[in-house]
Each structure stands twice: as C-alpha cells, then as structure tokens.
Length: 174
Image (cartoon, rainbow, N blue to C red; front, side, top):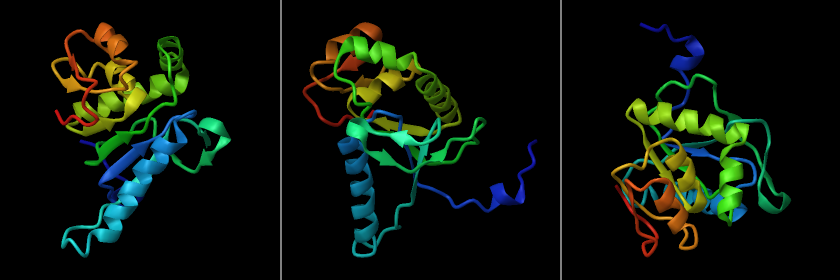
C-alpha cells in the first residue's frame, strides 16, 4: 500500500494529459490544445462536463518545430495512474531515418516508459501522425488498427507487423 502526500491527494484531476516532446509539430500541439479549449468553451452549452487538461514533457522546456516554445510540467519519474487520456501530438518527423533516430533519444525513451506504465495501469492513449511510432516503440500496437501519415505507413507496418495500418483513415479508434 502506498501513502499519498497531502499534495498528491489534492492535485487537480485531469481528463487529458498532452505529452509533448521537443521538436513536435507546433501545428499538432496547437490543434490539440485548440480542440480541448473549444470543448471546454462549449461544454456548458452541450450540458456536459468541462474537460480539464495538462501539458507535460519528459525534460525541461519544450522547443517545438520552427523555434516555437511551449510551457509544460515535467512528467514525474514515477507517475501514478491518473485516469486521464494521454494525447501525443505529432513528433515533427518526416522520414524513416529521422523516426529511428528520434526514438533513440533520452526524452523519447522516457516517454515510451511513461506510456507503457500508463497503459499497464489501465490508461488510454492517442497519438497523431509520427507520434504513433512512440506507441509502436512502447509495444502498444500489436493486434490494433492504427493510422499514420501515408508516407510513413509502410515503415510502421514493417516495425509492427502484428498491427493493421490503415493510412487511408485520418482517425481510428481501437
């Protein structure tokens, strides 16, 4: 049995955790946050709960693609299950060699560990574009239907032959 501190007991609950890595597509991060913000603005009109979210990273300040930056909280080394859906915006990668190189970097390796722990605790994840390769690296795609950018689909299928890659779909829920 673990004992929670006062601070941990009274942390605000989040519905979504946006996990952003350095170099991520600024547009993918912005789109994710814009959709969450729009949902929060419309929640009362739709008579549903207002979504809450946080933006996290695995290391210090986040420099997005093209020099943009975003503030984020550093993900704790031993994150407890939090019940939120984790969303990973596109990594800002456009080629197979760039993906393999990026996934070997320390912050990506830390993200893979955090994703594995989150899913093992019953958590849900979503990724866009090249961020799906983080899910693949974490071993989370076997037996799943997934999508990614059309030019990266063959690599994803090669790396995880036990999943079905459907590059003709923009969104797949599995």
